[in-house]
Every structure is written in structure tokens, then in C-alpha cells.
Length: 324
Ligand code: AFP
Image 1 (cartoon, rainbow, N blue to C red):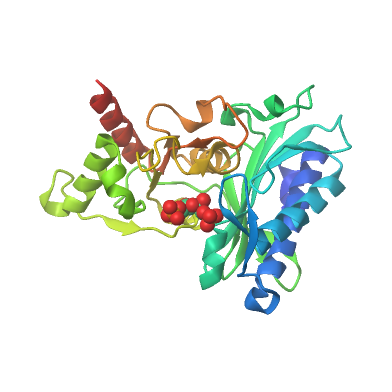
Image 2: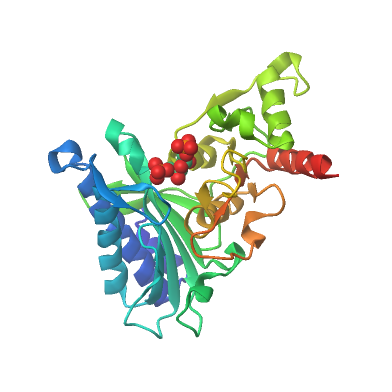
């Protein structure tokens, strides 16, 4: 089997990028060990602090952020970090380092209270001359690499360095990530969609139409039955799509009009969109491709609809029709 280090060398990835990806993999191993302790170490308990998103931070969110920061700092190749768990960008002593990292150290953490699947999401951007927030406001197409670590029955690292998306499985005995699936490919069509249907009354007409037609099934305009999933854990929903196809929608809704959507552009939408498009899928906001968006601030939220290309094209078409 090919392990992560061997694979990175085969990909002719620069030593600095190898260093960073291996550091993120080590962070994933440590976070996996932390959350595996569950209630034994208070992993499922909320803390009293509120993060920049206005959400109650869980103790484990803060601990995961600290573990990831330790490994990122130790790599010596990162100039700055944007994290869901930190209101301001974090600038490191290695000012001339080549990379910036945007991360959600523990996405879906509210699922830990029910021992559900969660993940860490990482986006790697080229460093810029300035040490200001604007350095991070690069379109997702500029990402050098993207990855998530999925903490499930197995601990997986799913990674792209711009040449396909690939799965590495942590061998618990060897403590090594081994390549277990190369060049993932998402089928262009699907009969499975993922959305939080409790928000249905707030959706825009295009999403109302798309979902209603899926639910209408064989007798409806799509002429086939659809299945629905919703894990409330983006890493798990996206991994299902990378593994067996489908579409994921967290669209704009007018539940809280000031919020463009729930998911954050820099450390959820962009890295997941790169992994999905590298596997032949598509990812849109309803107005544009996610990866084309120029961010306006480091914790910006966006609508995200991603997965099977033909379905996403249909959803984009419905958005264009409803705006015509
Ligand atoms: P948490 O990290 O607060 O659990 O949120 C997870 C998430 O950002 C993403 O992973 C899910 O797809 C989405 O939120 C679930 O949102 P709903 O709770 O509104 O379904």
C-alpha cells in the first residue's frame, strides 16, 4: 500500500507543501484521539463561550483548534491562519512562509453529543505580501490544496493537491494514512439529495421547485424516485457524495435574511467545493460558482449547492429562470 508520505513524493509536491499536509494529517490523528474519549473527557460538553458565529463553542472545538494550531505552527511553512474558532486571523512568526490555512477544526461538533460523525476541514492558500485579513480574501480557485479528516468508524483523510481527490485511511496499528481510494469520481446524475427540509418554507423558488420535483418521484417531472439524507455534518454529507454520488444543498433562505446562508466560504464551502469539482462534480451558490467568489470577509457565509454536475446544472438553470 502507498502511504501519505510516499504519495506526496510521487505527486512531486514541494517539500513545504508536503510538510504542511503531513502536519494537518498529524493534527487529524490527535483530534481523532481526543474525540474518541467522548464523555470520559467531557468531549460532549458545551463551554460557556460563544464563537464569532454566535454559536456556543464546545470545549472540544477549542481543544481541536489548539491541536491543529500546534501542528500548523510546528510545520514552519504557514504565515497565517483563519479558524472558525478565532474571530481574528492568527499571524505566525514565520512571516515569510509560503502558505495560509483556513480551517474548521471540528465541523459538525454538535453531533458529538450523540456520538455522531464529525470532521476537520482545511483549505491551503498561497501567502500574500501583507499580513492583513485581505490576504485571505482569495477566490477558492486559488486554493493550492484542500482536505478534510473524517472521524467515523475509520479515520479518513480526503485530499486534493489539484490533481484529483483521493482517500487515505488511518491504519490504527501503524499510525499511518494509507491510500485506499484514488481519483474519486462523482456520477453526473443522481437520485439522492441532502438538505435540511425543516427550512423548506424559507427557501427561494428555485430550490422549492428542485426539491418538490425530487419528492414528486416517479409520477413527477423527474420520472424517478429520489432518496433523501441529512447528517447535519457537512463532512459526512460530502463524503457520501464523493463516495456514491448525490447533491448537497444548504441554500440561501430568508429565515435570517441577513445571513446569506449557514456555511462559511473560506473554511467550509471553498475546500469542499475544490474536493468535489476535482472529482468531476460542481458547486454553486445559486448565482455563481463557489470557487469564483471573491470573499468579502474572513467569516463570510454563503449558500452552497454541490455534487452531481447534471443536478447542479439543473438547479442553476432553475435559479436563472426564477431571476429572469
Ligand atoms: P456545527 O458545527 O455547529 O454542528 O454545524 C455543522 C454545519 O456547519 C455543517 O457541518 C452542517 O452541514 C450544517 O451545519 C448543519 O446545519 P443544520 O443544523 O441547520 O442542519
